[in-house]
Length: 198
Image (cartoon, rainbow, N blue to C red):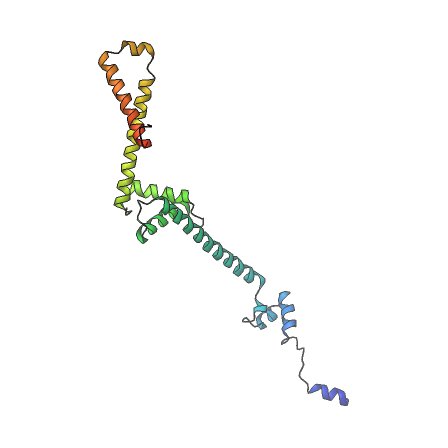
């Protein structure tokens, strides 16, 4: 061999196809098993597209799960604000959270309506929830007052809806009783409005 040929024999092959990363990557992408085995598994450029796509989808799912959890928590805060009778503690939160996930699944945003359904289920079917006694008593008192007012309004409507013939057939005692009830109802309404309208 000539002088140039003998000189080149001592230089290592720079583009050895078995050590050149570009050459190995190209052959590996074509499915060459020897090239695939020779790739450095720690080099990010050598990760197969399927693995990258799977990692991307897993990251999206984790982000979606995290966002669902944040939205569910915001909805839970709104639900708790509307229910002062329910103690806002860890035990109640766990009970409601588990009940909502049991009823609606774990991969969704729990809306205020869903929290309400879980709450109603736990309140009517179990005695596990802890309540604020003062707020509960206040709500029960208000509900009683509303029932009373509705009853009085229904009675007043019944009295007013009597025909002239029915009124003529009433005894004097019944007319006085109806008049007294109507007068009391009017006074009650005026008192609830805050005065006698004078």
